[in-house]
Image (cartoon, rainbow, N blue to C red; front, side):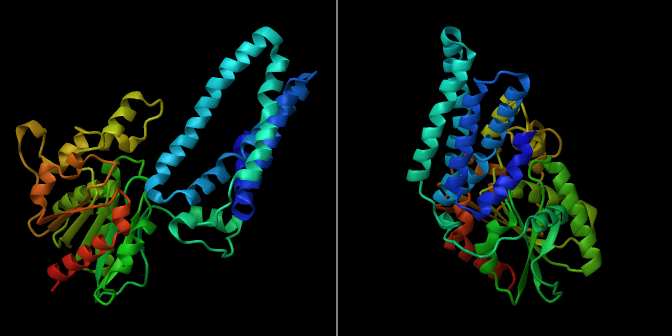
Length: 386
């Protein structure tokens, strides 16, 4: 409880202060409190020491994640964060081995002291050797701009809900381009593509949704949202640009919308690095993880959801389900993508529906920032809307 609630103000402090100092102070506190646990003479003393450990540990992850994000660019960040997270389990392993051995030969009090005391020296070493990079350094967006207040942050989290968001006032004379992010993604990932749009002819919209939910539910929500917006604004053209898992959501949405409305608006669909054949790691997570994210079940290879994107009924019956004839589909994928297999990105049924297929020499998220993808999107829009 103390670890959980202390993390919020400490994370706020890390947003405004020197992050390496926050980590060093936290490490000092939890190490000292661990050592003091061995000197407890009463229950309340041990309880207070353990509370101190929790508060100190709360200063570990928020500033560490922030530092890692500034040390490593997006395409290397997941690996860096996974190595950091692995330290928790390595620490538990060491604690069980060393703590158990010391307890057996020297008693539990000495175990607490031996495990805790070295952390104080490590805190000093960390403070003196770890470099504090400018915020936003890895993405070339370093800034000293004033941060929003805590209340403003909570109001933002309360106000931002799943849905389609306009980046400017709706203009009936311009064609909407709907950007759909992928798993763990967010609309700002499309910044480079949005900036490349011809804003005299097109207007950007972004769809924001909880990417851990079942994809069928997300697709249905998007379908209903677009239907309501079409009734309100009366647009008869819509371009869909989707990345990663967002491509799966978008294809299901397009198929569903075509069956639901008379005035079908989607004329162009562009996918980037979409796992049409699924993601093997999602299947491993479904089989082995003690906590299964709902969307993993849908993006696991061979899932019913994936089959339903390309087939009517069971896939083995071979009844194809293609995109509507009025939809022009273009498939872009990264040949340097280590997140999804190439065989998944170019699944035959998806590639067959595409008017053109473009391999780009980028990784899973790098493709969104690539000048080639921006140039191709511009060319595709110009050719489809002459």
